[in-house]
Image 1 (cartoon, rainbow, N blue to C red):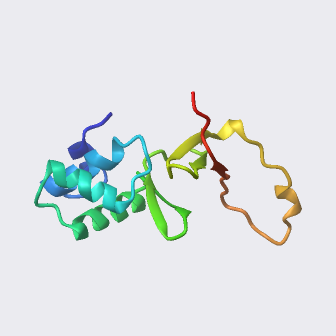
Image 2 (image 1 turned 45 degrees about the vertical axis):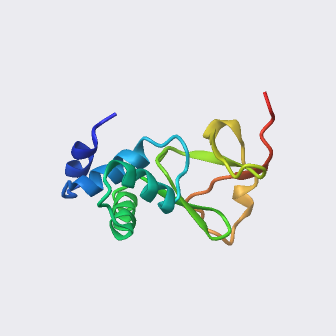
Length: 132
């Protein structure tokens, strides 16, 4: 993966130790972290990072197309480093959010929605992940 400094420079964002910590935390995440999760992780790498810097950097990364902001649960916004088309599964027992490959689900009936101009869609499944 491209390093945080290169990512920030490529996006015309001035690299600072705080922003580097945010980028490293969120873009290497295998989960869907909230801003608070990113703040905690970034703070481990850079104790001087503020909540404002975390929120501002996350919003810049969304604006630059490196992250997607998702509302998965009531009032809970998470940041998704996977910007490819995909769906989600939310484990109602643990709250964990899993990526589901786009081609694993088929949505029918979009053409019947004549009153709407659809620019994007995703399916959010909820349930329990089976124990292995």
